[in-house]
Image (cartoon, rainbow, N blue to C red; front, side, top):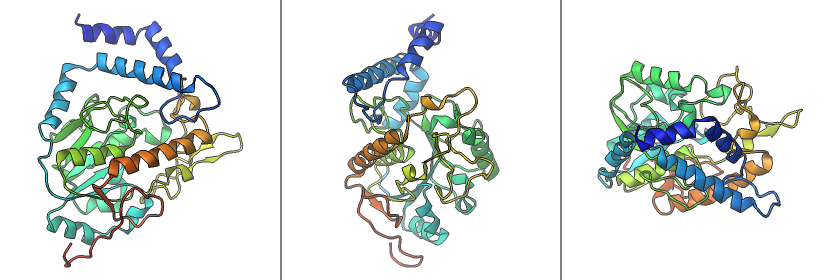
Length: 324
């Protein structure tokens, strides 16, 4: 038995699970410090032990997947349009997308973009599927994510590059065009923004997408649908629980059968969520906005006409048949 398998066995043992469960109660990188003098020490302990564990269970195959992305650094020079799933993306038209592409630009999408009307009108160049919920769902609203995105790719027969964490199995078994980012985390230890090293920023698909597109060399990243108003869709119910009705959160509609997007699957407690209460959510949102501005720096342009993202200079996509 090699070291990787030995440590994996220890990690999944009863003692390993007990330790991991205890550490998971420690505050994380974006947790609000609730007056305890040991808050930041616990953040460092949790982050350090988690990173050590992730490093020790990383297989050779996973390392090889990440190495492939390293070889592609700065290979792309075209501008790219990143389409987020926020409500501001509802103003984006297929004519604008086609015009952007005719000018030499690439198109990147993410998460549940396949649920939108635009998904049936063009083939994206990149599709970012990074959230672990696609493989190991803990929320009721995410139970069908895996099957839905597989159905989308099979039905459309796309050659789109799927970008996903190296630590997970390919999201679509019959698809062959993949790029793999490092799915490990160093949050709370240092601000790492490289897609081929442990991630040191908030667990944001949009951030990972921006980082990867920049790493590939795209000279300018335009984005829409990154409204950064996620926190405003949470509220408190009659039992004082944090809930997320989700109405208006995306530029496509979600299933009315799921009245609370934050509802956990039976067996997963709410206190194990990345937030404990509204204080955590708003504190985390502040860190997200700060780190998003740091990540975007001079490489991004906001073309979404939203009112919640101050990270980048603003512009608009020129209508079709006009120079970009």
